[in-house]
Length: 119
Image (cartoon, rainbow, N blue to C red; front, side, top):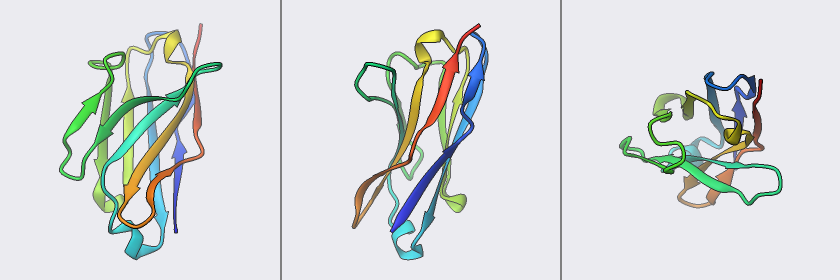
């Protein structure tokens, strides 16, 4: 059994920056099977949407809406994935969820962290 815990959300003004973190913990054997990690978000009244993913080899992909503003990274030694968010816009306001794929348990999700971009 593994758990994903996000942190770093909050209130920021338009044009500002935030850095989200997501740490995986739990069964050591399971953690060793962790593969691609990612971030998704869900705005009020909207469906959850994909934001970015990063493989174990650190290949990255981004949604067009965040490309050039967000940067995903990971520290495999710490079982942690990060999302650096710059030039934030009001439309980035959402609950942000991290995800990680494990060999035996499949796709696991964190509980989410709120990001609000407002003046």
